[in-house]
Length: 417
Figure (cartoon, rainbow, N blue to C red):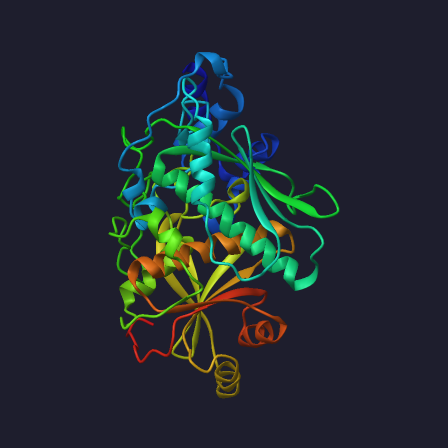
């Protein structure tokens, strides 16, 4: 505690330029990214404590650990609550330091419980290629066909991301802890025929949110949720996640009209902010992030001839907003109509780098949108973009589009948009 107090006094007293020099020395320069603001003093203290003062936690042997009784409510947890309660776990028993979730070192999942997680992993498929999830002890390994190349391989990577996200949401609903074990930014070749994208470790978890496994409130942190373009998303919902996974398809028909709330709900599901911390910062999301990186991929909206970027962080606070980045001119509208005759409203998912991890992140967002659209009974068509359709969205101003969710032709023209 004395060390933490000394650091607190130190961090308050130094100027920003001096602090950045020390931050670089400590390997914390990432926290000074201008787009996301500077962390608070308390966040910095937690980061430094985690780096220098946390002692390793001794894990009992497997024979000393008991099998937990998973919460009975798990199979009935709604889609929105599972999204809002998503968090990864570790053993340090200090959620403000690194991962918000905490593995229970005194308990371990049974083989049957781990198999149940695997059994629930179902996604709507776009491709016919080999895609699998295998279990080894408490590790889930995600596998794609290594013989596939070109755009088909990109699509398989997206589908693997959809599987990874599904596993995380199942764990969130059932009250199970999970953590990614990265195999490289593109994954790892296993053989001539198989490529592994990532490993996920699953195990017993302590109730993370004030003695519960789930939470329905907005992000808290040191600064409150910043009101944005949309009404606050619904985090309670009514349709359970587990049955929704079995019913999910690439197409869904509905007579319900798109509204500001339902559109905002889809965007929040894709990349919205949630209450858990990551590395002491209140920027947990409905999707996992690679090392907390915030710009691997992006979410865009095309509506009423305008192009928007979805923004979930502004003025160093979580938010739920749109930022207009352009307009579709008449010729481009005609191209859209040619390629998508039934739609003029789209959520477009794009990548900001060339590594496979950005495609997995597109898959995380796609899976969340489809689950939320199904739970909200919103009509949609999910599309992995071929080269001709990519070109249309690139011409509109979206740099590296990968996938889109078409939401029909909407007469809805909200004033704010």
